Image (cartoon, rainbow, N blue to C red; front, side, top):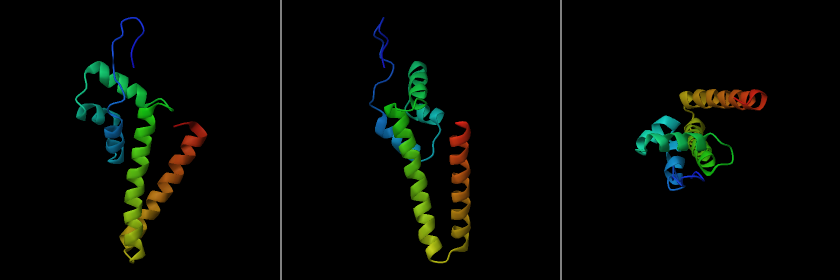
Length: 110
């Protein structure tokens, strides 16, 4: 992203794969910026881009988060199929939480 007047490069697309990976690990935007060792201006720019639907960083972060959740659920499902009661319980709790979160997003955009 650059400004027209002074052509200062704040942040390009070079961190997309890392943002996806960190999203899969469930890291916050703040933690990702810290791990990438960005300058203060770059942190602000990346944080903004990660909050804008349609931006490559937003999509990478959301995709990473979804992949991370899927991986956890897939492993819990395997354990649940083997009769692990704790895995069954946790998988059901995660499903209920996801339904609630999706409903809040749909109704309130939060």
